Length: 380
Image (cartoon, rainbow, N blue to C red):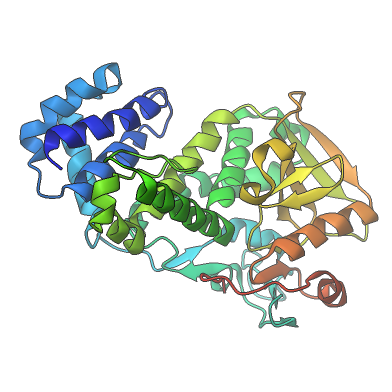
């Protein structure tokens, strides 16, 4: 494929993302167009052709200098990368701390332990602090340092946000509400179910490409870029194998949700006395009020759920409304409702659920869990 053909095939991608460039994550251009250009034709001298790319993008272009910087960034990201982060938490340590026991003795600032339960083996694990659980080694294999920096921009505000969540102070504080919404979106994309969905999307795109009669860019359900002829040559297959496409889809989906639901109301759900929440390794679920069904959004379908539910502590769950555009509010869940929400976390967990030690969940988890299975990437 020569550069003229490549530029022609990239044009639909550029047009598809042009409307998104006003979003905070304007690096979306790098996600689709540059991963295609760098991955499909790595030997092209983009310094020479950068003006053509700039013209092809039209008003969506950030300028030739910025395009060149993104090209260099993309190439660096697809290399070995600097300062890789191997232990990547799929549940924020600040959230896990809200399920911890109170520390006995020592500094009052020291975090207590959290109880992991292996739903695959049906038994408790060793109690550990938030830093020692709910992580996956090399979950995002490429450019992990940069994606962790993005997550940190959200998690830096989580301590205060969790402290005031569910109070009138939180509802009236736009910065806190933004942090809590982004925490939902972060945990929506940073979990094993999202990885599974990405793999299925890639398989569908590959099948579509094999059926194509000419080189073209095909967009799967996650907007995966794919040049048919180049894919058959194995180049984008290599990017998929390295984890580059998954890394890019995670960031893109985070910003997509952040934009679409920037003002979505939050219902702060508190359990009645004597009840408490637990959390699973797929912590954000799509929820349907009509029949009480809950599952990962990629499984239940966005159109089939009315809210996203996310327990952020033993005594608080966030319910982000997708349809209801009313005001944010505080609600109380009775013991039966709390049990149903907890059951959803257990049933949809890929390997572990976590809760306060001595909460006495073990027998109930055993009755709920069914066949949890073992996915390719497991949390610890």
